[in-house]
Length: 333
Ligand code: ATP
Ligand code: MG
Ligand code: FE
Image 1 (cartoon, rainbow, N blue to C red):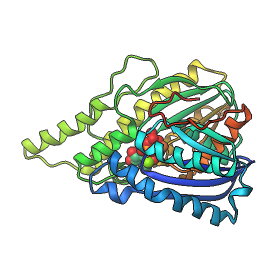
Image 2 (cartoon, rainbow, N blue to C red):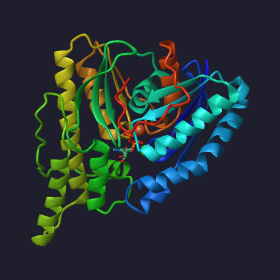
Image 3 (cartoon, rainbow, N blue to C red):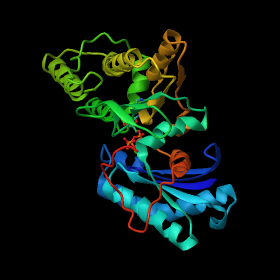
C-alpha cells in the first residue's frame, strides 16, 4: 500500500509517502524551531499559523520528491492526537480535504504509536514488545502484547523528559531546544553534583519536575554564595539522574515481564547519545531481548512514522470519516 502521512501535532509540519510500511518514497519536514527559539519554547498559536502556511507546500513537495500524483496514493494517514489542538486541526483538515477530493480512505493515527512504529522502518518488530517513548511532550513505557494492543505501564507524573531538558537548558541559558545542547555539554563533564532523586508512587512511573527545580536551586545557591561550578558537570549530573530514573523503571519492567522479546525507543529524546549508551548496556545484560533505537531521522517528529502507523491501523480497518477531528489527549490505540 502507498500511504501519504501527515503530521502537525507540535512544531513540525511533515508529509511523507511510504510504501508497504517500509520503503520511504519521500519525506518532508518543515521545522519551526527557528521561530520558537526566539520565545524559548513552542508558542501554540504561532505554531498553528505556520502549519497553515506550510501544509500545502509540504504536500506538493512530498508528491514531487516521490515523483507521484495523488491518484497513485492508496490512503491518507494523519495524526489525530495527542498534541496541540490548533496544530492537529491543520493536519486533519488537510487530510480530510485530500481524502474527499481524491476519494481516498482516511486513517487517523496516534502520534505516540507513530513514534513506536518508526522502529519498524529499520527492523521487524517482535512481540510482546516494550516501548519507551521519550519526547518533548511524553514519557511513557508501553507494553504491546501484539501489533495492535497498547498497555501503558508507566508514565510521567509531571514533566516529560524532553520538557525537563528544555527547561534546564533555559536555566543554563543554552537556548531551545535544550536536549541536544545538554547532550553535548554533558559529554565534556562528569556527573559529580548530587541532585534530588525523583520520587514517584507508581512502580513504573517517572517524575522530572523535582529534578528540574533541583537544578534551578543548585544554580541559585551557587550564585548566592559566589561560588563557581562547571556547566558541563551540572549538565552531566542532570542527564545522569534523569536517565537513571528512566532506566531503573525499564529494568523493573524487563524483570517483571519475562516474555518481552523486543525493546524499542521512540521520540526526540532517543537522539540522546547517553541514552543510546545505556541501551547498549542493557543489550549486553539481556542477550535474549532485541534492542532497537531508531536512526536520528525517524526519532524526532516526521510523517514517515505516521504513514507506517497508518499501514498498521489499516490492517484492522481503522477509518476516519468526514467528521474526523483532532483530539489533544487521545488515548493510545
Ligand atoms: P511529542 O512527541 O510528545 O508530541 P515533541 O514533538 O515536542 O513532543 P519530539 O519532536 O519527538 O517531541 O522531540 C523533541 C524533544 O526532544 C525536545 O524536548 C528536545 O529537547 C529533545 N531532544 C532532541 N535531541 C535530544 C538529545 N540529543 N538529547 C536529549 N533530548 C533531545
Ligand atoms: Mg517537535
Ligand atoms: Fe513527537
